[in-house]
Image 1 (cartoon, one colour):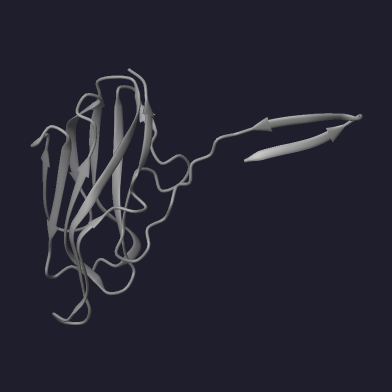
Image 2: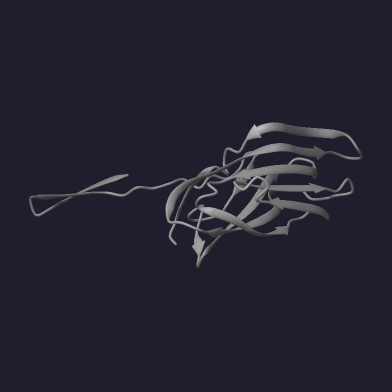
Length: 166
């Protein structure tokens, strides 16, 4: 983004770097803040909110793997989202977090459904990539009719760079 302003026959020129915080398309998963900067450090931790767009049908199952630099972060804790059956695996391997949820009776539907949250402990200062993969995300319609399934797709809206300080 570049801004130019003319004042009293002089020219003022400045630049600002910006980073988009994308909202997930149907079947995609977002990581980080829903609004504002995508990743915002709080003290010695970075909380990663994990949300899916399941605006059509109802979300019944997901498995999402987050990837990060193990020299910069270590997993601290996880918390559940909208599905009743939730498990989370941290630091196995040391550069990842795995969130899994299944609920065949789920009625959860929406463009920003909370799958869970992962808190990472900051171990080093860095600008570092946080990425991941939708291992699987399944949506059903009425009854047991499958409306959509995402399988082995990289995160699109959820990928981004975090600036953290120790």
